[in-house]
Image (cartoon, rainbow, N blue to C red; front, side, top):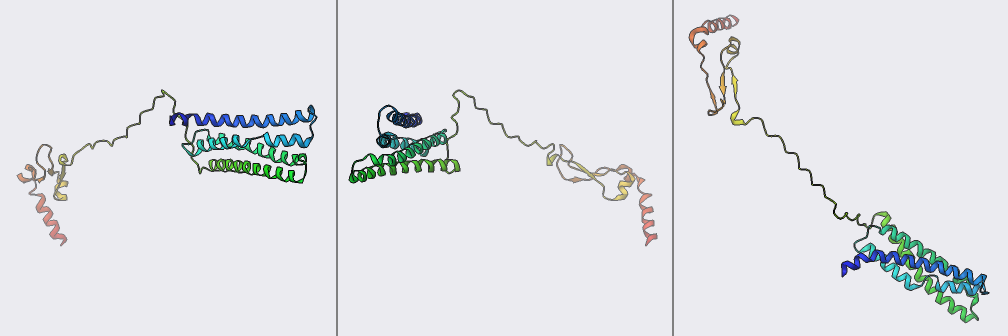
Length: 235
């Protein structure tokens, strides 16, 4: 039941805005007809408008519905609703003030004028309070201090699936499968000797010497003495 009332509060608020606006228009029409065809004085016609232009019952119901649409799970059209309600209440309040001032001479006697003024003054004060309340709510909505609900999702609409995060590419080599070569001296590299190797795939890791038949067979015999003689000559 509460959910049904929550759904009906916005249409009810718009209906109250329309009813209040129609009551103001009808009061003005009656005022014009009373002056043109009814033979009523300006003061008497204005006094009738002040009493019937916008009743306090309509005002209280309108303000209550608007507040329900804004402060408890705000509806998407809350800003437009508050602006329309504040505008209608402002017009009704201004019309009541003007009509009350014009209708004071219609009362007979000083005491009647005072009582009439006090009664109209209370009515005007309550309407001004309702008008100020609506404009303050509208200002809060415009300034962003009051959040408004977003548009409702369309029934049956498909929700796009979230895109998966891109995974990092797998490494192209593993540390235990890495292999490399190294020479123990520059002379070995210059003579074309086979280097020692590291990490032969499929075998255990670690450095190991590689067979060097060319160097072990004596090909390096002439290179090493020549290098030693050169070192002694420079010394």
